[in-house]
Image 1 (cartoon, rainbow, N blue to C red):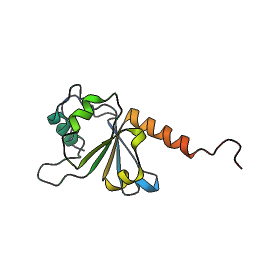
Image 2 (spheres, one colour; image 1 turned 60 degrees about the vertical axis):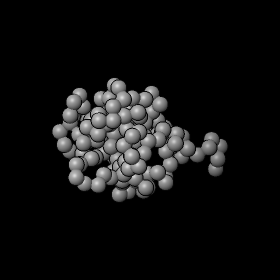
Image 3 (cartoon, one colour; image 1 turned 60 degrees about the horizontal axis):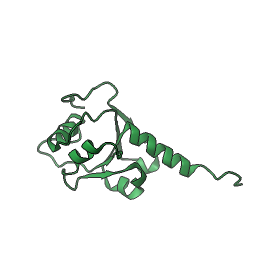
Length: 129
């Protein structure tokens, strides 16, 4: 991973996951802190470069960013980066979007929300045999 720029902290910034069949071959990142306080597309590009998700001179991989409604400056910073960056809310996350993107990028809050949502859906109904 490239050295982070600006206020991004290296310790605990990213954790890699990927045990589910849907995620097999997909790369998953969990970002503890986006370090974006105001909407700036240039800052979003710096963050992607710091995370190793964007390299100058090469075709960018497709990214699925799972953002929370409260992460408005982050959403506004990433929304202009083109078709190779897709933004969804945790409750909009679906198999198709995961499969068509190379990277699945969560914030800590959205990972917790997605896990809670999918765990709740996977639990058998009470009293079901």
